Amino acid sequence: MRFSEIICNEELKQRLMQMVDRDMLPHAIMFSEKSSGGALALALALAQYVNCRHHTDNDSCGECPSCHKYRKLIHPDLHFVFPVNASKDISETEKKRPISDYFLPIWRHLVMSNPYFGEQELYDAIGLDNKTGNISVYEAKRLIEKLALRSFEGEYKTVIIFLAEKMNQEAANKLLKLLEEPPQGTLFLLITQAPEKILPTIISRCQLIQVPPISKEESKSKPITNENSMYSEVVVGLLKAGLGKNLLATFPVWESLSELGREKQREFCIYTENYIRNIYMVANGLPQIADINPNNEVIIGEFAQRIKPSFYEKGINALDQAMTAINSNVNSKLIFCDLCNRLLLSL
Ligand SMILES: [Zn+2]
Image (cartoon, rainbow, N blue to C red; front, top):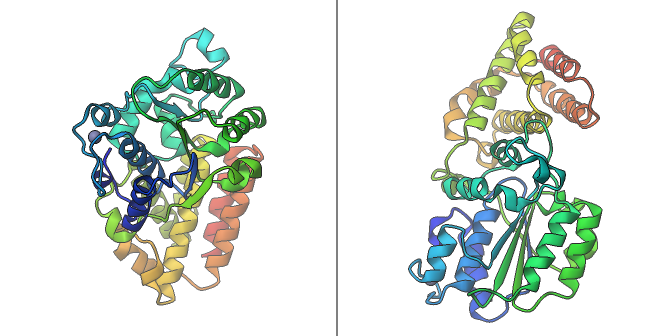
């Protein structure tokens, strides 16, 4: 994809292109973002720009053979690594040592249709059900084999590692060796949403670039995921039930939440925490620093008027504790029954 096609901070796009134009591109960049804020799209645009034969100082050409292959994500010198696991969609043999290559057609489809997806959307697409993905040592070994070959066409071989924090220790040690003695002409683009979980020695080998969250203006052109609109409905229902002290109305809510996979449960808790923070900011006259989806402005304004000040801290604490319990594999029904009760009692 070209820089002009992606939603991301404009200054950052220019900075990356200048690094290429001034021949100051490091061999490894780690893009750090808080949530799916466009780092993957940015990495892809950079990789295409680096390999484009006729790029201007503003963008890749979009027309040369390299750009065509990058657009379809089929360039032979473009390699992807992302967290996977044994999925029902791969063969019994593949399940023993699952690697990203087995899921490439699905990955390409996912990236081309919306490169702003999150961790759970990836797992759903590759059929992990309730499993969490990881980047294993087999993945790292396969990557080393691929990079030992000469580049097929381009000047650069590009490796994009999505959610690098999902590397296990063994994989991380292998990658570290690659980063310490990088194969010539190889560009590593790592994307992380949790840099604190990555070996400091890996981080120190990369140029770290913070990708800011997509601004309100920019997000108007970003597709809103179904996931968020579903969570929004649940949160609104829950807060209304709480304000009306309608305990019965919370039963179907916690039952359906307890049936979600753990990643989605965590995502729901994070979404709800942000939602409550937004209400808090509006209630305190700071809507300009809240990050509110335009579809939710009216209802958040209503909640800001009705919710008492003591709720916010209690609500966030309840959600934090629910997330800790999810991470500790506590029974989901207990977690969400308790969460709904605590939210209801604090409202
Ligand atoms: Zn081109």
